Length: 459
Image (tube, rainbow, N blue to C red; front, side, top):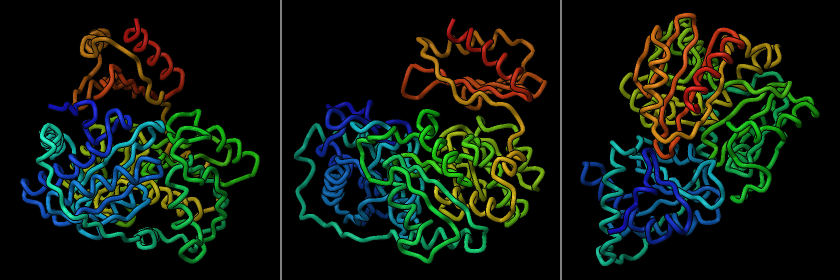
């Protein structure tokens, strides 16, 4: 039997094309997805399908649709889209969805993000393991995938997506802003002109300066991963040279957005989480806001100061979305620049987060560096990866080295040192890596604690 364990991950499907993911596998996954939905009681008469700018996307998406057809479901193909545009389609149409993307991974990769109707996530514990098992069975018996006449409807939802986002954040009355956007040759080059520009809707008081808007899944300029500082260098230089008010960098499928101030300095995703939380709590007083355990301690502090209820979650979109739904949270944010909104079916959208930042910045006169300082209270290391042979043994070794710390094990190991400093060590789901995040009130304390933990992990 075919083994798809290296392709079907904890939260999505992702692998090298064609070695791990090809049209035959995509077709089996399409059939398996529909069968899983029906077995769990979901309506699966139609599946909405989209793909990003990677060359392999159209063929894989079409094969998936044929697989869905074989299981008796029609395909509703919206063509090129960002991942949050697929979530909009799933939410507004009330259909399960499949987004073909490998996000920020290199060009030889592709993948699938699956969701139930209403953009509800599908992960290992919510159907993905069943999809994998059923697809493996189908690939072992290809005759089990029946031939059916193709049933694929093609529609465009880009204008509807843009109008919906503009209905959630009013940018029409802000002061004029010069905004440089680095799309990294990803889907931001497709959605930014529609949402923030005048391609489909009336002009906003924004001067959008495009960088790398040409859709190109080979990523000729840099990887479309704004969390890697190397991928921000071009944007930072452009901001300084052109005197922009703000810079925005999107990842490949444009569901994440990173913010850079007028000096070319990154604004941490934790600060963006706190900023957006403050805005949402002004609209929905007393609401719950979700944050993962890697975000700055400033995030729950600011949520409480704004009258909200902070709820801490494990890292990962399936956990955040589950907590969002459980608590009816108005907003959720992660250290990785994923931002989730109740008004967006509890799904993540980098574009909506960017619009909140633009509205906040343009609604007052301070430059972004000064305005964002309110939300940057501590010194953080960022995420540091170390290759280890035995993650559990290393975590135990680090724990033993801090006998006076208070520990919790919600996601990996988090140690609180009592002076406002803390660190988290957690193992990667897919690689032999330990991920370290450290925060402290002052930079020197953070650096010392970071180096102390790394010496044990790498020693």
